[in-house]
Image (cartoon, rainbow, N blue to C red; front, side):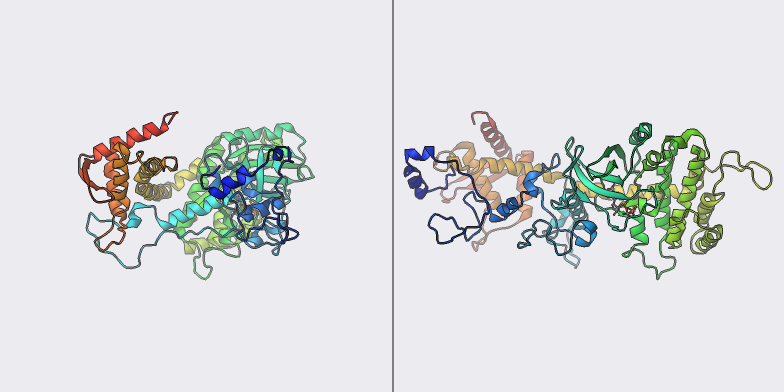
Length: 577
Ligand SMILES: Nc1ncnc2c1ncn2[C@@H]1O[C@H](COP(=O)(O)OP(=O)(O)OP(=O)(O)O)[C@@H](O)[C@H]1O
């Protein structure tokens, strides 16, 4: 029983008769509307808070039989309380919801959830603050606002759930499916089947995955799905890892599901460069800076190197299947699907032998980069783009970009369908392109890219360093709060009035509850951090603690205070407390 229930509660308890033990079990009716508000035994609560202290918001969720927060177990390591149903961009949900339809409720109750407030920290002032070398601003103790906001948005996207989507509740070990497709017009251009993409949690490890569904696909050759194991073994920072594939009838048809790593808030290269909200202004010529093209080229070449070395072929070098997962970070998604869809036979040396597939990969990489450079999606989208268009576009790229880029593109786009043993016009065997040779050609640019990625790593590391001590201080504060003012000892004046606990109570006042000479509270983060750091380090420096009635003062060292914290906390954490 909560200790807060006062005399009224006690009286109500004593008024219960013995017969009440035989009464029917109480079944809460949740938010069932009260039919007659004047009825004396009806329970109405204008504050919207029920007898259990829960707000009626929660009850209204139960009316629909689905409480998005309570019913999903959160991913491992995620505090369930931190799960916030985010707001949705209705347009992006396409076929699943109507703009007028409320995401959580059929009958549009008031909006209970607000979007996350990303600006809880005071931003840096616009003007320059002249600090002495040893001084720091408050912001200096925390990671930068931009990085924090980006990570928060990604976490929010990863935790997003959609209770009324009409999608299957579970798919194998995956549950809480949320559609990720931004494009509602499905096309079977790439795989020959309509595809859908969902985010889901896994019951087996609590992680989030991206599930790609091929609609209406019937697996005829079990061996075809075995290539997934080969893909699973690949480890490359520019490939979205494929974990498994399985068939399902949960959607009412024959579908196959490919399970990939989930990268929150990613966008495709198509959306970034050719979509309605493309990032680079087409008014500028060239629209896309050359470093961006090199960055894509180097990263995708690295992906191809890993894939080709494993005797596999990418076969999806298309603007809609390369995703940007953070600043200038691209990954090849949807790998492995073509191998399953087209059966295992491709690798058996026929016209589409592995060598020919590798040639195609290199050619398609060239088409993709050229299409971005010339801002012309047709070059990438149309597999049979005429050679004149390619030549004209290469000419344009030669005028707008460096010789190095043009040379790289010419290598990739030369000899489109050359296969092993092809004979050229001069009667000599045509040399095959290969990724190792290409990497040699672009080596200086690989070095530049490596350099900037290491610089970025340094920036992230220094951001991490800013928060380095914060975790230590939070742990110390937690210990402090475990110890100070425990409610069960409220009436035991001796508990925190003697010995170690008394010292800690006074120290807490010293750290947090000081007043200035005008009686105003001192709110000084620097003072708090200084004291807590000294306490954590247990330095010999002494501090004077004054009793609340100001009648006595105690002089103790931080070292002694640290011993007090440890001793009292040990006392508390003993099994019999
Ligand atoms: N592994 C992933 N993790 C998270 N998001 C992804 C992942 N792969 C793709 N996405 C995102 O999901 C959305 C849909 O991807 P998809 O590959 O279906 O593109 P699309 O433009 O809809 O292409 P298509 O017309 O072939 O379906 C894109 O915004 C993409 O950035």
